[in-house]
Image (cartoon, rainbow, N blue to C red; front, side):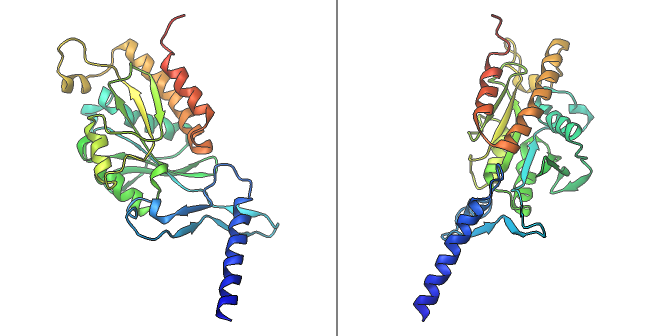
Length: 262
């Protein structure tokens, strides 16, 4: 009887999983391995977190979307407002304004806003412990809200890209960026999380790198950054609703050549 009961349970479980995957809701994480979430990477066994509910009164399934944690890197305070190193903060402000998500809560040393893009829950965050300690906010927030690594989007300045050029990628290294290095350190050293890089260009001549990062943009550079911020909001929206698809590939290609004159 024990083995008959066991096989019946296995059969029901397989049927239930098949039913969940048959729900045609775009970009929904129905099942997520707990071991893929931050803070549980080293567990030996894999446990599953169901992301679907029972049918409602209309016989339709309500699906719980996996939340996104969208973090912009920067330094707090008016002293750093508008500087090259703070474009990550500016992107969060732009998303906040465009999506109507108020940044009105302090949690884990970060200014936080909770809302949604479409039906997908979004947590916007601007760490307030200065750039080099950004991970002290990202790690605890990811753990508290049980956000999987693939749904932690980090937004920051990138000197290897021309000013105003954006690049959206599913993973990567820290590229000697101290803020990104701190975040990776608080995510168990993982690099398996998405990032939106905002190009700020390289320092001219022999200019000190730190002085360049803490410098404000010229009027021409500011125009390019403002345009990039608007384009970045749409890219983030596409990523959250559709994941890394052909639209993101075309976005990256368009960004790469957008300053090239034909």
